[in-house]
Image (cartoon, rainbow, N blue to C red; front, side, top):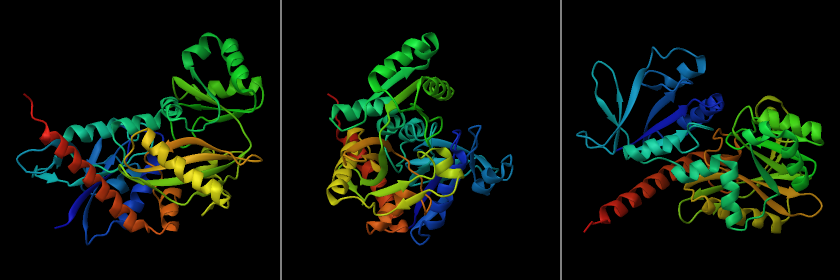
Length: 367
């Protein structure tokens, strides 16, 4: 009997279009001899779409008339762990075995959808509520990394309200702690949106103003001369790390334009770095994964300082890009795990983790 996999994509974040590309790649590469694939799209307004062609509907910006609204509800008389019900004339429940969320950014990568799936009792690929929320919030993420004494560049957390109430005092504090250059970013956003580099006070003011458009909490980091290294992690309680890769951005740093708009950025796999540095990256990637209590998958990003060769942890991404040319699957392919088998393994890990939760739940016997 085939495993029924619901691929969940789109969503309300600014990374809606990126999610569609990742989902298309996953849908095309799931082994149809093993899986029945159920595409479920989420519009930018938050409506869930089932049946018809949700992916095509969202790509073309159609209203969704060719699809049916989807309703998620817990286990019921259908006997499944969760049910996605199309509100069609037949109103027949569609039981799924596992959900594969491919929702980048807020309202998908931040623990919100994961909490919904937990309440419905359905297995799902990737990190849980805590890991997803911590992975999205760069300030909380860094606090957890600091607790494990993981190496990071110096940083300052600033609230938008602090910046608006006392801009001069806020910049004084940042300059004393970090100096220049510095990078300012929204704490809760992905794909390098809202990130700016500053080399003086005027640039810092502009960077803080830009980042504050996207979030109430900002992270300002000390800038260093570095190479950008990434490593993929796979597993649950005993995770493994891939070979590292290097990103050579076409711009000053790997911003949104360098990722998605401008041509010229290069992915070097494996990263041309010393063996000792590669092993340190792999070790720290696993430590970062454990620090946020992640599961399933994550891509961990690093800085390799030029001149000193020091490795600094940057951030963890709990739902990384998943096209066939994205760094996460390409790193695993270079490590001996091809794309289709990687999808198999992620689904296996999701089902294993869910079974473990059920065992814990049924073993509890109240007095």
